[in-house]
Amino acid sequence: MTRGRVVFLVRVPTERTDDFLRAYEAVRHLVADGVPGHLVDQVCRSATDPEQWLITSEWASLADFEAWERSPEHRDLVRPMRECFTDARSLRFHVHAQTPVPV
View 1 (cartoon, helix red, strand yellow):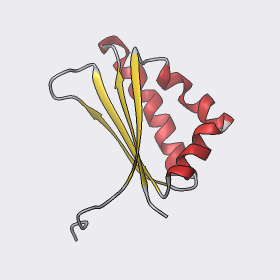
View 2 (spheres, helix red, strand yellow):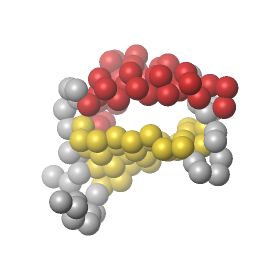
View 3 (cartoon, one colour):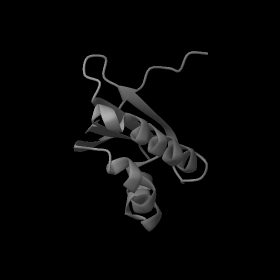
């Protein structure tokens, strides 16, 4: 089975930044504590555009992510975060290769 990487490129108006980060914090801890197949996630802010954000997550497989995405719990949990977006794009990738993790 191949690991999967999910990438969300989103725009959040500056005045919604605090709401967005609070919503992200609530979601990420719940996902990390019990969604099958979830490995890691990150939220990143653009160095040149304060309204541009990148959310990435790695999964044991894209099927694990897709099962989570279809669940009613997913829709309820991410709603507060999505309400902050003025634009969103979602991409999915199979992890093809990775450099070794430093020790």
